[in-house]
Length: 418
Image (cartoon, rainbow, N blue to C red; front, side, top):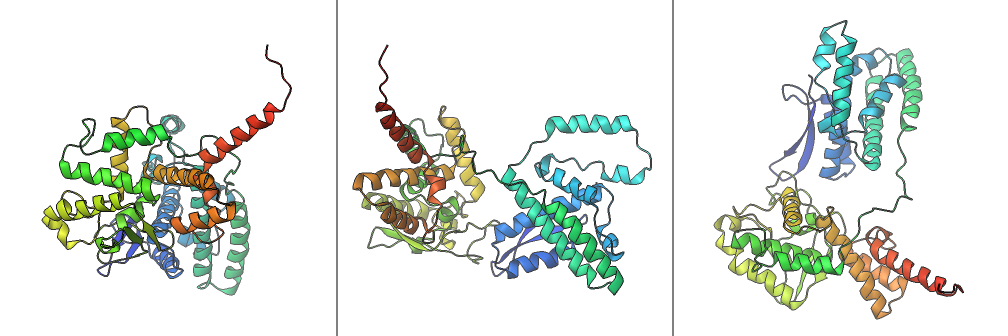
């Protein structure tokens, strides 16, 4: 089986990048050139890795079908529509669940027992899991752009006649390919992620308190750190990447406030997957009690971990290394297990939804106009002016207000009680 793998790399200066590796760990030259173009366009390291994973899927599928894409392009020919449809089908499923074990086998034999293929297909159908429509669409767009790049790149080495032939074939095929990129539905709002109810918030805060007998973590440092993580997420609505990117120097020792800054490719972050800030730089104010809890953690708990002293990040693991994004995911998984009845979708990002819904409630109580509320929210969340992101994060509040208004309208109907 020919394996192509998207690998993350970190350079000494802190820069992160991704490489498409073929069997034997050698990079795919053409993919390296394309990813370098993505880097020059200013795409974030995580976005580039997503592109690289899409390219890995593309190359795996072509290898499985025994298609030598570069040799095809050298002949002035492009992928056929049926071959591109194969990529469309593969993009629907999780990469881990796609079966590529038969690539070498199908390449070594001219005749394969049809019954064996049917058996393999039946086994695969029971195991594969689909990705979301948005993920599928993103994969296909990345693939289409890469194939277009390859056609242009290889076409420059061909004779005029072959180059023209390749241009015509690729334009026709890519148009058909892009037409199959699914549209992400905007009307399916039921079941979309919402914030936590007040009862669930209180329950979580009670369970994660360092002195709680129901706290799922054993060590005192982990208990205090995880409690602080939950409090900061609920208090500020920041993303997990923003939280894990915070440095001690971002906190003001004189005033109850801190800064959230963009620090792409910092050499002071040893993590392979860097914790990054997606939104604008901003300053966030905290209640004095929460700020005291932060400095208590820094001065009396984090400081006891000697290995942590060489890192500037606020949130660290017990070994002193800056905490990873996956550790935050694991923390919320353990929290869900410790609190049966919590939403199964509870993640750190749900805290962001929760903050935005609470913000809307407070804005309503204060009587803020829509324009003032929008401007204040955008500033606090690091969004650009006139951003419409709030609509994503305030579904529970909007739904409640809608129900209240609907019931008020129904009160005007003259319906006698039976």
